[in-house]
Amino acid sequence: MEQSWRWYGPKDPVSLTQVQQAGARGIVTALHHIPVGEVWPQPEIEKRKALIAHHAPGGAASLRWNVVESLNVHDAIKLGTAERAAYLDKYRQSLKNLAACGIEVVCYNFMPVLDWTRTDLAWPVEDGSLALRFEWAALAAFDLFMLRRPGAEADYSPEQLAAAEKRFAGMNQSEKEHLQQTMLMGLPGSDTGFSMHTFRNSLQRFGEIGEEELRKNLIYFLEEVAPVAQQLGIRLCIHPDDPPFPLLGLPRIVSTEAHYTRIMQAVDLPANGITFCTGSLGVRPDNDLPGMVKRWGHRIHFVHLRSTKRDDAGNFFEANHLEGDVDMYAVVKALVQEENRRLQQGRKDAALPMRPDHGHQMMDDLHKKTNPGYSAIGRLRGLAELRGLELGIRKALMQEQKRDE
Ligand code: DNO
Image (cartoon, protein in one colour):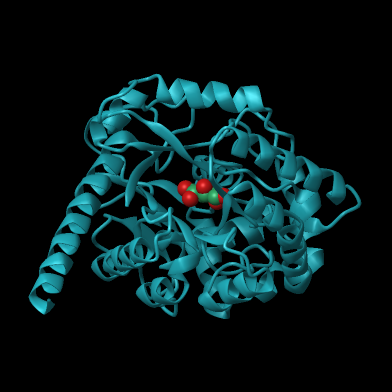
């Protein structure tokens, strides 16, 4: 796999030098300063590309912008409003500009309103490091008693309602404010979140369109954009819902293998592909991750490796990369086998870009301001573990093959 690292750009507290030292060579980034939906101008893309490449010109340690994460999709496209056509034009133009700069992999998502959602961004785990966590009682407390979303009660079981009441009653004012801030955080890489007012409005608009309509809008987007991407040599890859279930009355359409099958079949082009995020998909016990790689590996263009640990109530926290509920050995083995198949088929995209997704805030990073989930040392640990796992699997497969010959 092509070991990669998400970098938020010049303002990222983790420097490119540190990324090099972590051993990653692929840089995953976006032009976060350009508002969602607007065209990414070619000179701006060139500038970012040069910044990354010139950081360490030549040599084995040089860095390369290999993946865009994300070229975000404007709400007009997700909602299918009248301005959709104009935003589709802009999206295609950005893809053309990226292709002109030689960037081939473009990740995006179709999550309504919120990108990823957590209720706690600094949850202490046993070893003293801090992890991201999702807790139903906190989410429901926010939904029912702070947001006061109309009809919210119907979305929770009697046990969940009781737990939410108890949770809310136990929170002091600053804990409530903190939860609200966490929930309204907005897009990764942006400095501005939602206000309660704009958040309520967005929830309402998406709540009204429902699952079928949202899926129709996604397929329309792909019909309009994937053929252009295909011609340009760009591989689009949709990120799954995080977490992979309905939330705050919002529809979800990218949470399971069945969802992916529908999306892949609806627009059956290699350019319509998958961001395989084990952290998001792995939250559902009914998602068979290695099986998904076996069945849909040929359409995976980008990989996020991360694990979560569930409890009986459906809460989860982000575990260390080789722990938790994801069978990382089986997943990486399936990915290496997919890469080997691609090599045999002569595919140019045999090396899958992979990044260690998230990591605990630990060691010196505990005293620094870091982007939640994106501190340096936790991801360094994750990448190092994953690199070792991949190497071991690769060598073992080679030996097996030699024995069979
Ligand atoms: C979270 C990330 C997501 C992802 C987008 C892709 O850490 O995995 O924010 O970048 O959903 O569009």
